[in-house]
Image (cartoon, rainbow, N blue to C red; front, side, top):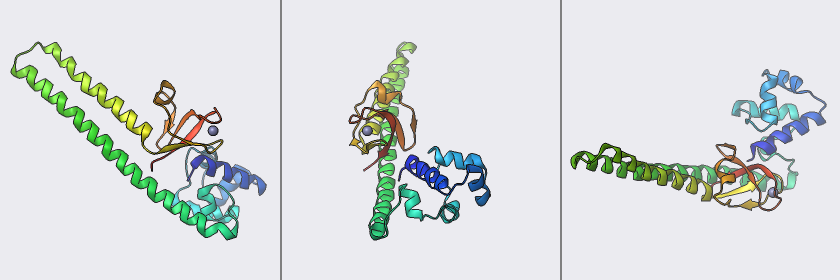
Length: 197
Ligand SMILES: [Zn+2]
């Protein structure tokens, strides 16, 4: 599932039907801002709107989710693929969250121990800054895990890759499931979807 691809697909079909964003919005009793949000990949249609949207556009939900026309003969295969994609990503997301929490706990423990040692041994208070070391290591570890779990997929050329941990990655614009990074194949700086399996 790819929000940006779905957005482009909605726009494409809407234009094929000769509809404006306003007209599509009116059919669905929503604001044209919402339609614009979908089409620019900034949001997915709510589940309750998916069926009505598909009806107006003359597509099916599977086509909406995959962001492309699916010929009848490969429909079942594609539906299963979409389903598996959703499930695997959900599982991967859970693992990533668990790992992040674990790292945070591993960071907090040494911070507390250092703080306690300073108090017990009556060490100078400014030694408390030492607790920043595990915090720093923890933050790096979390970013590293986020970068290396699963793979990213380029929006432009569909290349799958694991990005290098660099400033380009670190400071990249990001959303919960994608990041604007440079694709190693086509070299474009575009939204790449983070697949977590
Ligand atoms: Zn690419």
